[in-house]
Length: 404
Image 1: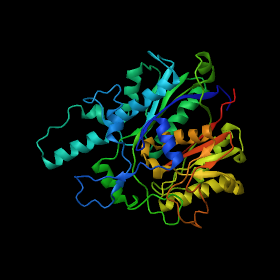
Image 2: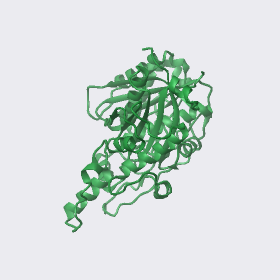
Image 3: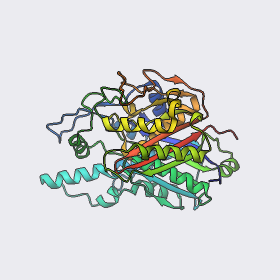
Image 4: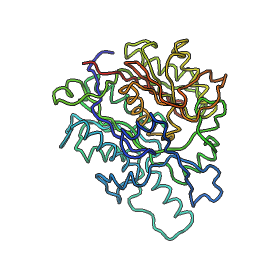
């Protein structure tokens, strides 16, 4: 598929690592985890004691465009990340109908929902928030970004669980490449480290009671995270015309559905998404120097993803740096793909693959040794970022060094 070249001119993030895309990247690169003890008064029998929530000071120190009576934290996170991305991109004023917004989320306003359900169920005497519906709706973050910056182009909200953000970036890429849109504010957001959501994941028995160890033989689950990642993507002509600094290029995107089990992944679907991204980018498996893996640390996911990568890369996989950075920033569900895209872009720009922290022991069923302990130098012009979701939704983004 030929068309307009699509470049990245801005990045913004807020995560368990704190405020800022650079803060996120440095934490991932240096293996400094934002996972911390997290206790909920509403869960007296809490078994899992760690999560990767956004630090409160990262929010209070960066309260930009906030209207708390109308916005759940899921929107606040997105606005913080969007402001950073737009500032880096150099876009100002009313952005008009040439700018779209595509921001995904898995849960939407989880904290508002959790508080209302708690007060209702326990008859606390606290009345229901009259702004609950506009705060809870999944598209709230995308709509608030549109309103805040006068972006009058199309507004979409992908809600495809853990693939939400990657599919959002991929859709923005295709719309710009095809000429439907000049530029887009895109990514994902989640504010799900709240008691009700945490308890539900705990009951699903996929949260690690110790440490998240993707691809390791002793892995025993994921760590719940949250946050937002936002990119400004635009056509090359638009970026060049306004003298924007180009950070990298989006060169390919692939998405597929397993059309199988709701919860158990199928390596065929993941492999198809990766291959589509490579094909669209016009590159070979050997051109990829780093893969930011979905790598949740659950038994089934890691085996399936490793098998999918082996199908795509074959014997070349052993020469590619692979890591999951979820032990650092947690699994941010609908925001994960954008947070991890920013990490993958950091790897590309600095030519260093971040470590897969907490890894201890090789697993023959996985058959993959990720980047261990410390960051690993790489020499590459292309990287991949994977997102695979419940419901069998797969998404892969391919990024390349901008060469003019």
